[in-house]
Image (cartoon, rainbow, N blue to C red; front, side):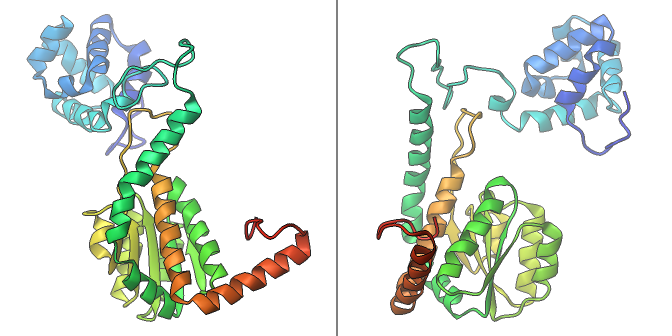
Length: 308
């Protein structure tokens, strides 16, 4: 097995699975023991691993080297890192299991419909973040957006990348000069051109994406203000002039997209609506123009959504 591709860090769970066909019988017993409970294996001594697997200490040592580790100590370190992702990603279970409760789907005629499960998790995410939004410094953040020369929206990853564009679409309707960037190198380049008249809006559920945090730090170094929609007590939150807190609470139902993006979207909508209400006459006229232009183009009724 070639381990030279990334000697500093690799996925030990995948590596063990790949190596299984090449292992000796005793080493396969070690692999089975480890994969059954990563956290327990990471805590065990080499003697305990050997005893539990029913093999010699030498077999455990050979196993560690076969899967690309220098020794058993490194193996245990990598196992601890792998176990840190959480048991819900390591053990198979019913597709409908959430919050650790065994709730089988499909086979049970009375099982909760998937649509209800998804809705309930979205509703829970919104409810948990509602109170936080009520206490967020929205007025101050809105004032900064209103007087800014330019607004730059940064987002990375699946949810935040899409919502960075969503915020750009919302701000354009209110006549604000805005651009969105999802590429980390472009974010760094843009950040280095900013000044105290500019505002960065950074979107990150975790607030721990190194590239995004670095770009925001560069923007702050050049005097730009930072509005962060992110997790409290995160590195990104620590940089923010105004924090709009987002708290994610993921369940054990790992098969559907994260509900945290709905909490992010709610925060985004509240922030933009506050901006519209801070300049009501200007906002009303801009929205009227858009509605007039769109209706002339596509037709439709008075209550059609603006922008489709």
